[in-house]
Image (cartoon, rainbow, N blue to C red; front, side, top):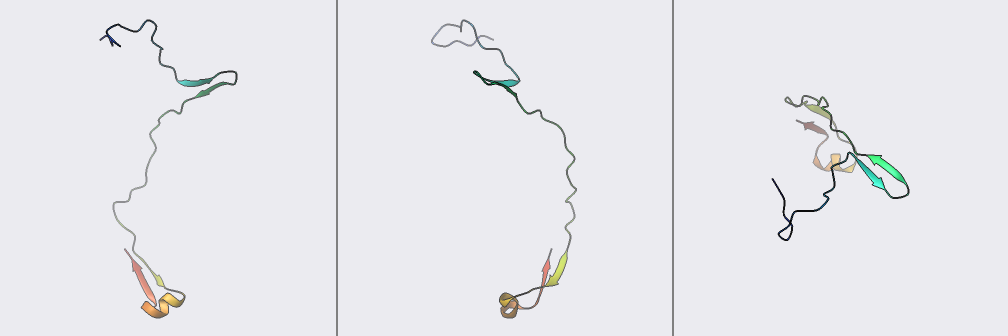
Length: 66
């Protein structure tokens, strides 16, 4: 497949590279993708506890986080 710009094909298209080149400073490699194990969050953990402070005095002293 040819890509045409204004009706003509480009003369010397740049080739893909895996690093960023900075003039006069060198190059920096791009990050690579990798598969990472993620935690299983299918089931929620229920947390109960005691509130503290003025809000607990106004709204009750215990909480449940599901």
